[in-house]
Length: 246
Image (cartoon, rainbow, N blue to C red; front, side, top):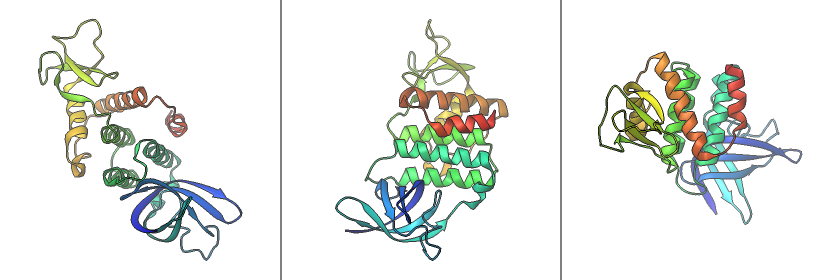
């Protein structure tokens, strides 16, 4: 069966002497693994289009046991990330996160859009890395069924205040008036407003807000903590990225 779709290479492995197995995040079929025959050949048209972080128009053949890349026309290779190890490490972490959370062999257009926008902004270097990382983490969690309930206080329905507490275990908010012994993490309203924007805004606008440097740090910490609490997995690429940042 022949299939055509757009896809981003989020993982690659060499197999045999001249072939490669790639993991793709595709618009129409979600996460799939595919063979690239003769990928090491200098004459192969699929070399750049099927390397890590390559975004391409793909023609795939679905055989009995595996997908095979028939043709790949590059649209964006994100070469700019390869000259900065820290930005490249963050990109690889986002790829690992997408591989963990995006659906298998099902439509995943919003996941792909989120990844491409994140990589474009990361390449341009116009937004701080902690900001991009936090937005991508929280939005991907929302897409994957882990959306926190940030509408109002879970106790009294209050929408805001000077600050509110966020419970990373159940994703709820509680105001200072309702907070008991188990308060969660205190967050200023700037951070809470940012989290609401990431979760509830339309895809094209999720990066369209600003925060102070200090609030960005708080946002980055809380989004990572929420993700790790619910995914219950260690990401080697995240550990490496954090080593570079420190």
